[in-house]
Image 1 (cartoon, rainbow, N blue to C red):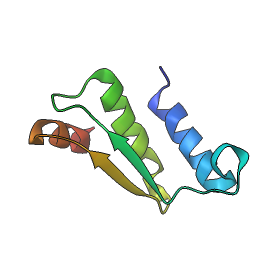
Image 2: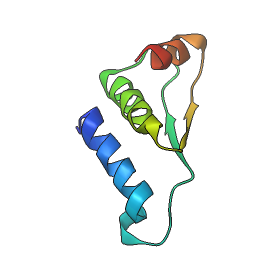
Image 3: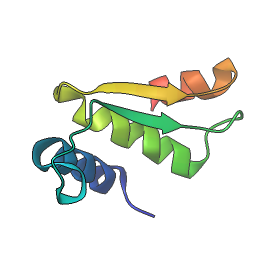
Image 4: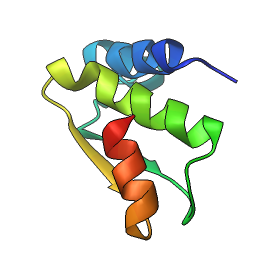
Length: 75
């Protein structure tokens, strides 16, 4: 599994250089988590999405009940 920093670097690279070397650039970061308390993977995913927040990308997350949503916010 990639670390949050590795995921964030990948997304930052895509924002600066295009997705997989194309002329397509992301308009936002979109993630999804399960409808239960966050797993280690989903917590890492949420941290990675929040990491490049200094950039102009918006973060969108599909989530279920408030448990997962609040845990993402605190991650």
